Image 1 (cartoon, rainbow, N blue to C red):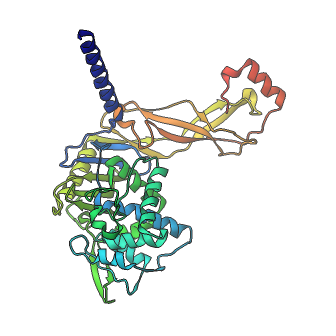
Image 2: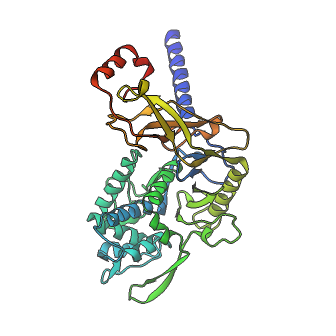
Image 3: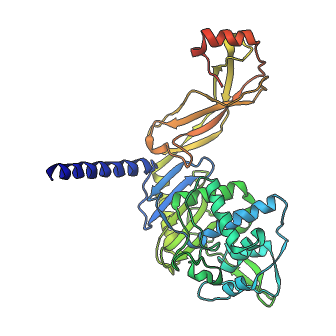
Length: 423
């Protein structure tokens, strides 16, 4: 009996340290852990994906109407592929129109007896967060509500966001989807993502389809009612018109649910660079200010704790076995002109050795990318990105380089391989 007890104790101890290790590995090395009234929060640099502030950013929470950003991305993708346009007319199925007219869950009623343009439905979905509009948009481009949910899941998976189940294109609970609900799931099932995953979703949307800002930065828009008369809808993002905020926001989306309270994703600039902010579970569902106050507070904390370090043009060289130059030497340049956020103290930037592209073809052209450098700072707090621990930048050849003959390549491979990089 004593032996079994000891074995159980050892296994329990092992399990404890295993879980502890996993948690440590998942922690984000952000510049600050913001002091904010929110269950989860994050700030990222929009261009680089650098994680600047992080609080419980890996844990998934209900995202409510922020779900609509995935539908918007799918719509914008169809527009880019010239399969639809902003002026394309959409008929709203009666079942979706019924959801849109349910006053307890939506605020933009739609009619099944008339058509709406894609632009009008996008404004309805993004500004006052019309649930029916988002569901109608998804059905219009995929063919059905269920196909929209599958397309949203596949989109997330393509960004390496795995294991997500979508119950509503609009972010409603499964029960609130009415005739479209998933009968295999509980009534209270709803879409969940982490703050970090939402930052990635938002980054894709804003970088891939920058024209979406023509809608997301509107404080209001004029649309048509069920009977065709015009009326004004207001953007639920209060930071667009908050003149007391030191930050100018250009979007992007709010969300609210009984299960989480208030959610908000914003896009603004800090120290001259675009950033994306996410707060989840900030204030109650009907609270119209806390999520925005906490977002501004988080940015102010980051602004105070950070400074900017410019990634300057970096020249160097590498040796390629197939290069027709003296000793196979190829002069290179990293021309990435951008900056990283770093803690407010003396911080240096360093570069790794070049990692070559696979299957480099010759002759190399001047300015051709031959590989990548990893840039890291001397502060571990600044070395975390959505896609890894370091920023990867292109390394280009500074001149045209021809391919040397086969015999020279073999000679270098046999006698000097350790001095060369291979691809």
